[in-house]
Image (cartoon, rainbow, N blue to C red; front, side):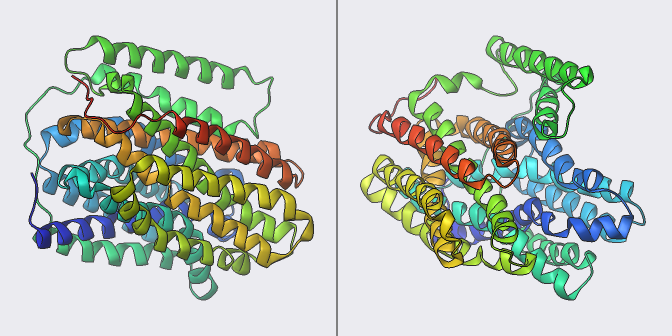
Length: 448
């Protein structure tokens, strides 16, 4: 269902405002860890579960998104997710202890996990193919800038207010979004009632175990057999989940669409782009503090120029993709990644903050020319009714590989070995360029 221009614009803007607010919550707490540790008298390993738990619940509910979109009118689903997130946020603000804080955080993660693939599916479905590059450029602006802005925003708020003020800002914005959604959000897709396959849902829990293992790998003892049991069990569950999806007539997730060349390349490329983006937003504040001696506030503010450039270029790159095609645009983006990581590797001995900021800007600019074009390329190779499944697959794989990137960077970093991190991610993006070259010219090949 395509909407007229004014309704389309208001619909998309309302969706993106809510998604932007929820996206910021994903990355905003890293700056506040010391504050939480002092407030609740807990170690960093416990406080880190505010991010880890959020990510785990978010990842495991992503595969449910296509079923929910098929069975629940989108307006009702979106309003429900806003309510769940708002109640969780209110619980966090009022929480007298860490367990209640954690419950509120898990409620937020549930909402974000369902919303991320859902809103992309809706936007793609209501946008003509020839305009999807531009529209998804705006979507990329929201995802990319929110990831970069989160630590900056929380750092500024904590300079003047208590940690509860971070969540109060989220709550006030979401109340506004809820009011706007009542008027402007519609349910453009037809729904059909279908049975939820609980066996597939249980098997998908393997994603939680896998991410738990990945995120704990830097702190675990290699002689702790329980960790290996968790990993083995998770892998078995994921294998069973995949086999079941291929055998069922109405699977929870249409994994068979990964057989389409442009779609599976889109999944890999958007993940490789996200891996560099999330790594640069986490590694560079550490670099600024540990190598250049900047304060946490200034290390956060040093990311502002890159975040601003990312925001400016996302829509421009989408417009360019609609004009000249996704392949050349992605070649530009991944070449920027390679150049940015290479320059960081070469110039890190200079210890010049301005050079490092320019390199960071180049890397985040590369994301604006790669992540959303890759996502749109994948979606354009699918029939409209398969887009929810495609968006869910992309979001889930991107989340798993994004988490893996953080662990990979942390392991390689060791004792301030930043140059090795820069070199590793440069090599990953060289691989990405090879994959971009393999993209077929856009065709109308779709899954049956």
